[in-house]
Image (cartoon, rainbow, N blue to C red; front, side, top):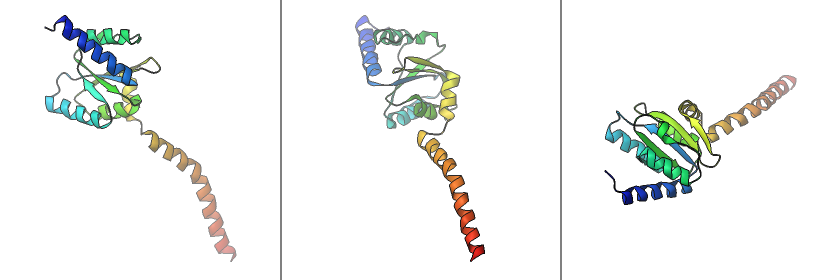
Length: 159
């Protein structure tokens, strides 16, 4: 059982992390092995994020103090929280790869918007921003390349 002082410290720590980050992603880790959870923590840490297990009630209080209208107590089971300074997509992409966890949802602290678990999973399956931009450029450049190829072959026939 945590003392009142320990709970206040957890709330203050959560409030500090909320202030330093852009997004929160919640996932259920019940049934996962400890080494798998540590592996996830390491991958998230490499991306600049942090995985913490905070009691849902204490996290709700920290979110209320931060001005977020969100209640993590609505999640069933054990919920871990990913604090990320990035957008939700890169974090979701890392979590989607792990079949042992269940993504519960996400919260955009900047836009104050909740993402249901299914939406976070869909965002995690999208290619990265750089890949999408490369695909757009390729789509725009393809007709130009084809036109230049036709001109080149046509010039060979004329000469």
